[in-house]
Structures are given as structure tokens and as C-alpha cells.
Length: 323
Image (cartoon, rainbow, N blue to C red; front, side, top):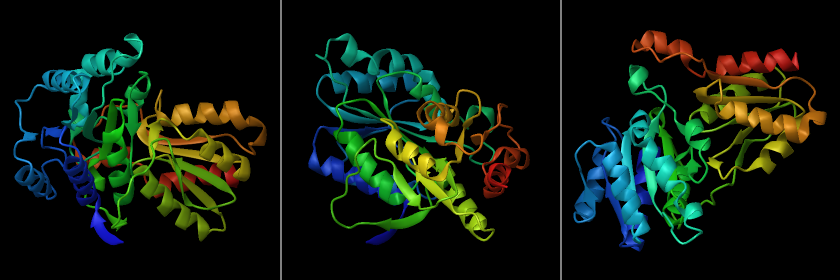
């Protein structure tokens, strides 16, 4: 095991895919944003100069290029930089990549990956802070990956590139510098497999992406107050590991869903509906959601902090249902 950053693990997964398959290319190099991790991508460019491209800023054009290349047999990685910019390619994503296989009667495959950074980033404002995973989830045909650890982003990235479906890998901007242990041997993680990040008996904290970190911190606080919280990391939204959610809630009888998408029609809303439909009779108290409020993200970092998913907000939600 080696201790590396989320950004390094992502790049390692990408590089291993490019070594193994000459049809894999990278179009757009803002995968790690413009922060201190950005130079890691330059190593990929140096090793594969003929398969790393920096095109003009035209998200719709990039998506169209990637979709066409994938339909023709390549496995492109298309980077949008910021998740908000994927909205400029929405027609291409949901009305072309997501439906091509179905509408062609299975004759067309679109084996490609879209990468983007989502979430509250510190001054990004309403135009650079979207978390579009719930919006993508509302459109069939696109696999959605939302890792929370270096190990998971590497293993899931390799599975996403190997998939014959269009797959969005959505990383939180604040996770890039987070470090964790990653196996040195070959690593892949199956899409649609959630993980139990912490075992518990009193309440299930269900989260994805950076919200998993907040949930684990909340679980530590709760433990000091006599509440044993279980933390479930979804890891992917489509496909979704429903069984791990249901089994956890059936055991604890309580659920708090933690996610940085908006409250209305967000990831937490869908998970809440699944729990209500699948295991309502085992609930000991109402389901609670800890999400981003339904307001535009302010440009002021100070005001933005009011929207953050914090351990304290999670603990407060748990106290409401545990007592």
C-alpha cells in the first residue's frame, strides 16, 4: 500500500489505462483544475504526447468529438474542467451519448469517460459550483461515478474506461489533495458496488463524494456521545448499489442521507425514496436529509460556508431522530 493523494491516484489510473489500451486518449487537461495538483497531468502529456490534446473551449464540440470517436471504436476521456461547464454540452450528453445504444437497438456503443470537478470550491459562485450528478442521473444511459477516496477514484476510473457505456467521473474539487492508502497491485473496483466505510448499529449515514468525509467525522463525534453510526459510501450512482443501502437501514432503523447536490430532486431525495419504498416498515424514525440548500451559490467564500455540508449539520440531524 502507498499513501498518495486523490489527484495522484486519479492520474495513476488514467495512465495505466493509456498504457494498456492505445485507443484511450485525453481531450482537455483541466482534470485536476488549476491548483497545485495540476502539474501531475503534465506527466501524462509527456508520456503520451500524441494522445493528450488541449482543444479550444467548446464543451459541446468536445462532447460531440468524443461521442463520435467512441462510436467509431476509440475510448476517449473528455474533460469539462468544472462540472458547471458540462451544462453547455447537455444535449450531447443526454440526447446522444446516453441514448445511442438503446436507440440503435444495441448496434452502437459509446465507450467514453467524461471527467469534471463539482461542488463548493471556495468562491466559485453560481457559475462554477454545480454538482450535476443528480441532473445526469435523471437521464438514462450514463454511468455516474462519485468517488471519495484515492483508492476508489483509481479503481473506479479504470473500470469506467473499460466500460462500454458513457461514464461521468465527478470528483469534488476539495478532494484532490486528500491522501489515502492505495494498493500497489493492479486495482479495479466494479461499478455499482457501494462500501461500508464504518460499521454501526444506531443510524445509517449514507453519502457520496466529499460528503463521506463529513459523515465519518460526524460518526466520530456521535460515538463520543453514545451513538453508533454506520457510514455507507455509495461510490457510484448509476449503477446504484441499492442492497447495501437497504441492508444498512434495515439493521439500524434510521437514515440520514448526506449529499452536496440540492435538496429538491437531488441525490438525497432519490435515496430517501428508495428507502421509503423498500424498507419503510423497519424505520424507527423519519428519514433526514443534509444537503445543499435550494439557493444559488454566492461568490463570497464567507457566505458560501453557510451552504457547506459539515459534521455539525449531520450530528444535528442525527440527534433529531435518535434523541
